[in-house]
Length: 102
Image (cartoon, rainbow, N blue to C red; front, side, top):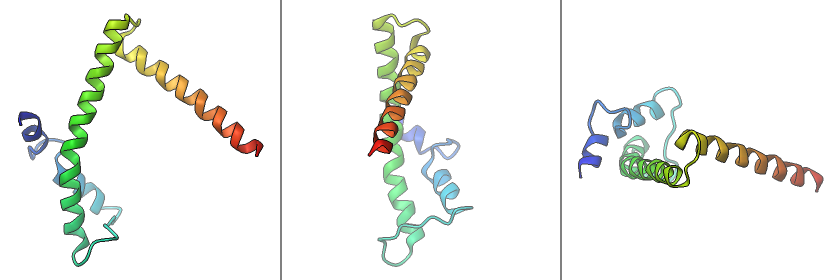
């Protein structure tokens, strides 16, 4: 419960209200399927999703740290993230070339 309370802290950057203000401010994003007040519907939806996203993001980063320590990767987690980014970029370039050949 501590993790959810820290995300919902009004001083946190990941506070749902701060994210909603960013979405509704300059972009005027709304929830298309909502009946009535779309801003309130968006606020409710974001308030449900932000704590789960913060928790899963922390778990993913923690898992990467543990795996890099166990594997003994030089540079730790940073090295693992760079390698995974390079591999993903190679895969994306390969898939783009394959798509362009069609």
